[in-house]
Image (cartoon, rainbow, N blue to C red; front, side, top):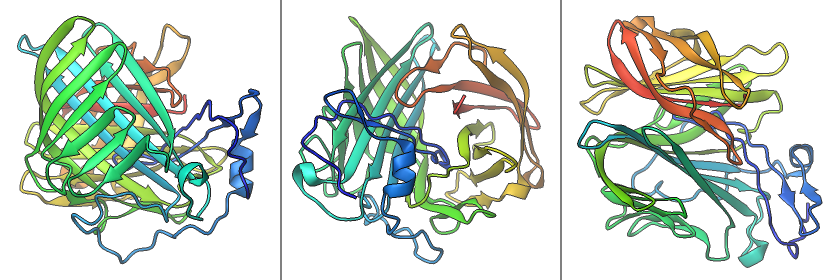
Length: 371
């Protein structure tokens, strides 16, 4: 499939779900300067060459070699989530996502590059939600990654390190409404997802991805909102996943939970939602302070909503949940104290901080996509 590149890229709308510590559906459009659709999701599903590298069990995630772009795979996502507090105990949430999708397995340079990127930055303060986004094509100097020293960037947004590893590193994001300047240090090691970095995302449909997580990151620095600069500190999670055929015609969204349990463990659970008669699918990981982890399969996790709320924009979203992992004595009832956290960007979502109680207390993060 040849894509005309002499037309200006105006809009990419990407919906990503199925990420163990987050990703899976990608739905987007490329628009020409005449505002006519160049590609739709139906075009992509039928025309993008299905000859990317498959995701197979066996290969192990390798550090630092896998701190890079994996262009032979169709999709890739980097995700940074920080739950922060200021000196008065006020709560803040910082989210940064960078998504890559390849339009072809063929390599190209400059405007012939098949790599399309979109990025979102979101800052939630005690009383407002600020958001911005960036779009870029790979190969033209606006987005990219350097391994040694590590630098992941799009436009003037970046995560930079002085080593070949992402952490210790600094997240720097500047927009018209806010600036983010956070120093990040790794408190525990990087952990491959699933089995040695091979994460099954749906057993019956033979879907999987590769990836790793850094669930124990210490973050501190400043958030600037208008003329006000706020010193903040707290915990963050950073991860990267990549794969092929993560797009599913049957998928319509996902719910992703990250809980920081009172005993120091971190629980990550993803529930993918599907159209028709296909049942929802669950998977996740439990991380322990000693650097260990347990991969959780579908039948080991119970996830169901127990209450929904209607937002001021008219959308109804489930914001009260039960999340149980019986084998590990985890029984949680989760909710948010703040309803209005809808993020209206090219990847629309509800995303915010949550609290949980039950067999153990926990704080966490919930993202809902596809509502």
